[in-house]
Image (cartoon, rainbow, N blue to C red; front, side, top):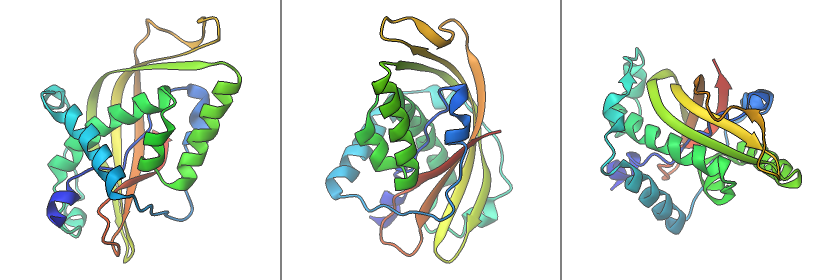
Length: 212
């Protein structure tokens, strides 16, 4: 069961929807934060990710670059790199949609408390200004494990995503105030996920994101 649960990728990434969010989202917590989720929350997120994986062939078109971190990854018990990356690609899309759609419930379960607070502040600010975000993930062009750091307490895996997206902001009248509905951006970001190696939990959480 432990091996099975390790393949469930519950740490996830929020894509950078707005250029002006770079300073907010491009931060790295000083100390790792581990969140314990209930079985009900665990099952809900697992089902959401599984539904996105089934009958979706887009992962086959993603360029998965080789990594020199395999020796480090081998230190993580029951870790499967290929399945980890496959689930990461689906989770990427799920959180991108959650952030744009103000789905704080999903974001709260998938990020550290410190990072969730920043996302929540952005969502609250948009609500107050009657601003809505629309985000469409066209495809993930490339992904690779960029870095691995393992201590006695935690494992951190940084993934570089190169993706094509359409991102816009609209005001209360539905007018575009930022971005372009007809412009596809190619965005390169690095997201870092962590898990507590001393915990029975096999949950990975997003702890930082930055542009590259």
